[in-house]
Amino acid sequence: MISTFRNSRLLLVLMMLALVAFTGCGDDDDPANPVDPGGNTGGDGSIVCTVDGTVKTFASNVGAVPDGNGMVIASASLSNFSDVALLTIPDTAGTYAFGVVGGGVLNLTLDGAVYITTGPTGTLTVTQVGDRTAGTFNCTAVNLLDTGDTITITNGTFDVDVATLP
Image (cartoon, rainbow, N blue to C red; front, top):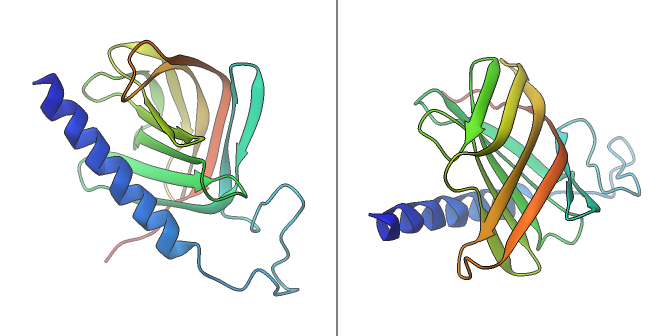
C-alpha cells in the first residue's frame, strides 16, 4: 500500500513538473511584464519557505488549478527551473495537517531529490480561497528515495492565482 501511495505521489509530481515546464514558456523580455531579480514573473504569486535554514523563493512559472475534488494544486519553480515546489491545498479556509486525508501535501524537488510530506506532519493554514489561494505552512518532508534524508520546512507562505477551468 505504501508503494502504491508513493507511486501515486510520484506520478503527481511528474504531472506537475510537466505543467510547470509547459506553462514556463513565454517572453520574459517583455518590458510590460518585467522579471525582477528574485525571479518573480509578475503577479502570479509565489511559494516561499525556509528549508533547513535556507530561504527558498519559488516564484517562476507559478500556477494553480482546482483538482475537482476539493483541493487546489499549486506549483512554482526557482529561477533555475530545476527546483520545484508542488503544494496540494484544501479549497476551504482552515488549518490542516500535512500527509492525512483531506489535509495538505507538499512535494519539493531540490537539487534533483524529491521530498514529500508523509504521515501527519506540520500544519497548513489556508487563509484565502477563490481566485487566489493564500496561507502559511510548516512541516517535515522525507526524501522519496532515501527515507533517512529529511528536511525541515519553516516560515512557509503561498499566495497564488487559481486558474478557472472550463
